[in-house]
Image (cartoon, rainbow, N blue to C red; front, side):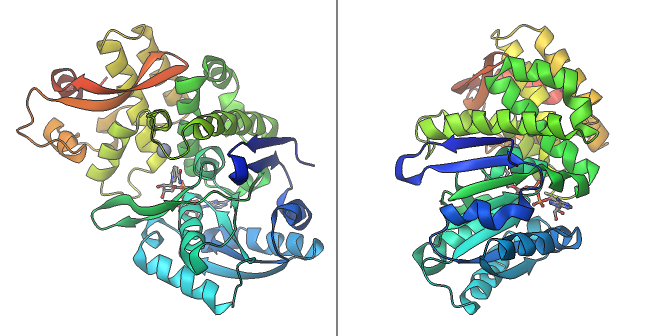
Length: 370
Ligand SMILES: NC(=O)c1ccc[n+]([C@@H]2O[C@H](COP(=O)([O-])OP(=O)(O)OC[C@H]3O[C@@H](n4cnc5c(N)ncnc54)[C@H](O)[C@@H]3O)[C@@H](O)[C@H]2O)c1
Ligand SMILES: [Zn+2]
């Protein structure tokens, strides 16, 4: 039984998020009211399939009288490119879909972004459902309708807004997720506490360890709060025109630069880069005089206690030189005296986008990170 149903209120594009354990086994019955037709094409990856989830989903769809085919891709970020998109779109077309055939993304954020974009462009738009199986996808990428692939010139540069018809979050999937991936997703929950909910951050400080040790009730609570927070932001700024949706990128300007300097490799997962970025973005808010100086230590201590690296030199012995970081942030060497855009904290639980952060404050922080 699903423990919670949230609604993402987007007018004609509104959809439910169901959160509970064992939902995949009941996917047919749960999805039926949200599907225009009795047939779906499941897109997943080989790790998720090897963990048994495509088989369980097939059984759940059979039980609800939903016809299905499955398309598998190789796990990993490398599948989220033109070649991966071509494979998924052509495989969907080979199933002879009509406009009522839904695409179901069963997997982490890579599968959600890739399958969602394939759904957006196949036959000019097929209905789409998210069944996120990584913690990161459950608390972040499966909600909000951003889909897309990477370009050789940068991550997520090709894409579309394509909202799902429904999101099914089965927390049982977390049992097979590698612990490192679990911790990486956890960083995004901490982010949600920092930008929108001081109570959530305090709750994580008390219950985060239980969540990371596999406590299902704790996972459901944190996932629900995260989805509520993200949905509320997306409802107010669906297409990121107001700077409000940008607050979801707290810690990400630093994070993306760390990722870029690690070559988007397994050396540093996205959520791990975000954890590093959360510390620096909090410290930046402190140095700009916005935030109680104790906040940085608090964020640092909690992330470290959760098993996430908080010291950049632990990730890369040679460090992350300020010039290279600024270049990765899109600032060139000569841009002295300029300003940068960053999401900042006014207090724990309240974030805003500033476009006027002086370079003179950022550079010393990059030279000796908090
Ligand atoms: N669309 C958005 O709004 C948004 C937001 C944040 C991140 N993203 C994107 O999400 C991607 C990262 O997502 P991710 O961290 O989920 O990566 P991922 O999809 O690569 O999944 C991480 C790893 O875990 C495996 N896995 C997933 N679920 C599993 C399970 N239940 N059991 C066993 N293995 C499992 C995957 O096969 C993969 O190896 C990035 O491409 C990022 O750009 C998108
Ligand atoms: Zn992120």
